[in-house]
Structures are given as structure tokens and as C-alpha cells.
Length: 441
Image 1 (cartoon, rainbow, N blue to C red):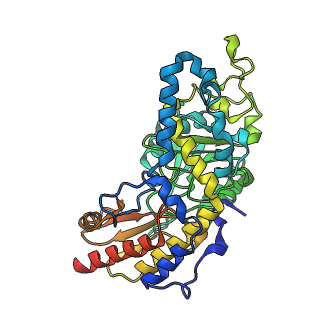
Image 2: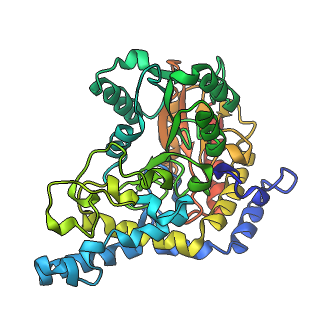
């Protein structure tokens, strides 16, 4: 089963769905994950407000405050002795993250590391996995990727002495369509063939909410001798991922969206074990990626550990990592399979409630294998004003330009998150959207 296909049995059919509010309340009454909502500090101005913007910044796990305060207390009392003598010794602090991160992304513990920021990790892993040589110099990227990805790829290729306008190949949806067709991506990969060095794609496209099949497109990349990496910023903590089994070469993600680890939270990376074991791979090196058995010899020669840690440069920022520990504990307690199953139901209900509204088009694919929690709503007229009206009515969501240059058009993204949102909130959010658009029609 591939990363984006998990949880199919959890879907609600159209015949099972209802516009009746009591239907949503009944789903909440039967929800075995309902208690997790109380474990988060939801930023609500009024009791009936709805926070559907966890795809941009997740709310704070209540346990995060206590963990950060404990580290501050240990620092104040122990000073440098805290590296080995604190409640959670700082020297091995990052080791606490390995098992829960591996469970969250479907990896083995030695394949994951929490480090840096998403864009910094893109640059670090491009150094290893984009290895232009001979005719094999092309890098395939989606057109309209999140800007930071585009900036990172273009400048990285340029810094390697190559022309990004020539070497970076962008693939876009077909004319008149919003989402990529996987068969088109496969065809482009096959066409580039032996000129292709690396494919880099999103697990979920940030604007449309489309989820791509990681295993399928990785196979297509490997079939022509290219490597395949993934930006999972909108997929981690959202989809039930299986990165090891999907055979991805590498993946990167941030932790402040669905993983709820705080603004600017420490990001993460996956490197498949076949690469982790290859200590001759080119990489940028830092003290913390050195073999821990020899780290304190302070030798001149870098000896990478056979672990994803080998790509980390410095010791982890303890005060920034503590909230990630708190958040991962919630995911472990809930279980990503159960969360995904609830998410599928919530998104199905939201889609059902929003279908057929004049002036609104859902551009996120309907099949559950092709989406996560997010629904992207294309609003044809006065889109930004309607978005502001949604917020004024208590629905926290976010706005993105459509990218087509059409006056008045825009995209509103709604993302009901199963850890802390409810089915009744789905019902009420749809009511806000329906009423607002009809009043302003």
C-alpha cells in the first residue's frame, strides 16, 4: 500500500452523508479521538470560532509549555552539566525523536533526523542527490512549486556552475486543469530518460491540496536511472506515509504545519538506508554528523555515522526541539492510521457540504488517494473579500492567489485536522462559506 492510499476503508459514501447537523454531532459522539482536542491550546477568540488553518501553523500542544520550562529550569540550575545531567540529557536529546518520527513517516529509525529548516535541508540533500554528470544533468520540478522550493532549486543549480534555465525542467498541469496527472509526470520522466539526474516533487501540492503517489513516481524515476526526492511539508502529520517501502531516495519537511511544533520549528529529513550506509556520498559536513564514537577525539577527518544524523551539521537547539517531542507524543498516542481515517471522513463531509455552490469550485481532487485534509476552494469573484468575511464570521482559514492573473479570483484553503477539529466544526465551517457566498452573490 502506498503512502497516499492508506485509510481507503474509512471513506463515507455520498449516500451515507447528510447536511443535517445532527449527523455531524453523531460522528463526534462516536469519535474515539475526540479527547485529543483538549490537549491543544486552540487560538480561538470566541467559543464558536473554528481553526481550520493547521496546514499553515498548527496549534500548541499543551505539553510543549511544560517541556520547554523544564529545559529552561535545567539550564538555569545545571549550566554546561546539563549536556549529560539534565532530565533529558542534551547531548543525546535528538535521539528521543527517532522512533516517533520514523513511525510518523513510515521509515526506519536510522533513516530520519530532525534538523535545521525545510529549505536548508533541501540545499543539504541536493548536494548529495543532485549529481549532474555527462548527459545526466536535468532536474524535474513541478511548475508552481512552493516558492522556497523553486528558489532553492534554481539557486542551488546555479551555484553548481550550471544554468538553471536550461537544467531545471518544470512540469505543469494540462491547459485548463488545476492538478498534475501522474501519467503525464511518468511520461515526462521517460522522455527525459538518461538526461534526468533528479526528480523533486511535493507529497501534497500546497495550493491545490493534490496528493501524489510517492511509490509510483519514485519507481518511474528509478526506471530511467534518476533519483527521486520529496517535499512533504503538507504531507507529514497529514497522510499515512510509507517512505521506506516507497523507496524514496530522500524527503524533507517542516514541522510547524500538521505536526504542530511551533513557528519556525525544527524540520526533518528522511534518507533511505541504502544511502545512509554509503559513507562515501558527497555532503556538507558538520561536527554533529560525525560518528559519535569518535566525535570527541576532535580529529581533522570527518567520519560520517551510518545514520541520517550524518547530514546534520550542529547539535540540536534544545528549546526549539522540546515542542516537537510534545507533539510527536500526541501522534504516537493517537496513531497516524486512526488520524488518517478520521481525516478522510471530515474532508468527505466538508466536500459534500460545499458542492454545488455558485461561484465556488473545489479544485482538490475527490479521490481520497489524491488528497489529504485540505480542500482548496477556487472563488471566482471578490475572493479576498469573501475570505475576510469567512474570518470575520469565526472561520480561520488562509488565502492564496490563484496564479492565473484573473481579477477577483482566489483560493481559500480549509484544513480540518483530526487531532483537534470536530465534525460539528466541519458542519459550521461549511455553513459559514455557504451563507457568506450567497449573501455576496
